[in-house]
Image (cartoon, rainbow, N blue to C red; front, top):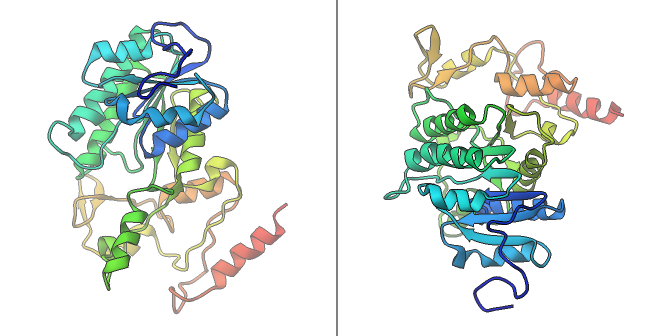
Length: 325
């Protein structure tokens, strides 16, 4: 093995038409590294396309000798994208940033980057495209991050109508930048900030599960043209149960915490975000996910006296789980 180049005896996959070759853009990141590992286990030849190959050569250790190739590519540069996609069967675009710095802006990477990858993939005859987005992607969102994620989906699907879009929630794992950040703060701070004043709810998803979804979509195991929201065990075929101690409609519950007004035939909160108003006890995504698996959201007939400590609905979920076969 040479000090900084390709393995001796292993030719670069650039320009070679190969069976089961997938190009993963942003493949050296937190999610990308796990996705590449899963694709390698599935027997794919993998081309990891990154801006700085010198910092990503350890990725070759995720597969067998010669199975993983590291190449340079920039989502702003068409020629580099086409070289990275030459001969590939599938393409996975994981390029994203959590915050903007210099030229690494949301519009440039989330929208134009997605469009450029899709355009180059189509030009190179790539059969399948997997576009990584984010839970909450919404073209009408007050958040620039969420807007550009939605615009990126649209840009990719305009070129690949059958592209599979994955929308993960907050992703956790050994090297995540969310829970580990709070853990680091807890080592030195006597108190921790509460997102949204403690009212914000998250649906964390394990990075390994997201990687499984990426690999499955690249292999053609996902329904073409589908958007998959990743944040529930339902995505892995597991039993899903849920409960709420408050049977009130979701919109009414939001009204207790913030000002809700009506604009353009929709409800919005004080931050300008749309509030679901379907008359359900929880958000539509959760209720629908549970319904799909035959276990409706468990709620009491009337609001519990102490919604934070009452265990009636929770115990009903346990009974349902115990009786599940």
